[in-house]
Image (cartoon, rainbow, N blue to C red; front, top):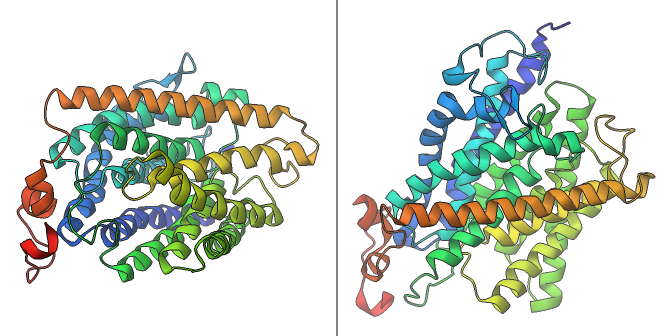
Length: 420
């Protein structure tokens, strides 16, 4: 029987607002990491996601992602333009809150995911190209993947893939897509001494702190109610984030004999990414290990793998979201405990055998292949309509001025001695 529960409504309402806050937080985080002349451009890409993806989600995106299943591949258009999405519950997804509130909660995930991708192509992707890319990517990558993993009838959900809050749909999808986009668009023009140096570390810390704050809603909100599962996800999120900071810092110390502020916040984000698919399936002790390992492997991805392979993932989208999401998805199959969440499966270390690990590995492989190929195709299509890459002159003068005719710092002037 479906009955609205005021406590659950309040909890998911708050979680929705927290997840929304993550996108402006991401804008600050990314904005602090780029060079001064590109601050507004990268921040605008996050805010553009709020506007564009909301409209897509209202008109057809939500219906295709969560609507009645068609062939285990995609939802239908039964909820086109939010038809029949109102204030009564939907028993398939959230029987104690209004269907409209569930829509809003899922909307926030759809918004932030393409915004995360923007970090990989920062400082050289033209704004018109990004808008087209975001529209096509949300439509042909995010929506089908969300239905496969979370939609009732989706084939990955039917197979038993465990993804509590978006290790596949959000983290790996954005990370792999960011890597492909960075490779296709090419490296940034290397201009001046400030290349790869975050121009405003306080903004990086503020944005990172807002992301951590919002992540409590991101993960705990997946419980769809004020219940014990939400408390578990809240706890695992906090513990993993803290452990990730330590894991990154220790490896950075052994590797470079220094612990940087930028590294500390990166370790936190890496661990939060990793715990996302596992948050409601694993114990607090397991979350400590998942977060700690995430800090280390993502440090290696950012500091070693990227240097060895030579790709320019500007803000380390693959190194943190791709690698962290991969580890977290695999770790879910290792550490999941049905005593904590009977909707999952026992992982390898809790008597589940190798089967759940293999299922999670299949989810990883499919996510990499699907998002990688589709991102490649989408970018090639977008390039038919508008150039993807800013010209050398546009990069020298900055995307703030050349794409938006604005300047984040009015007193800041380009000088030949500093930047060329």
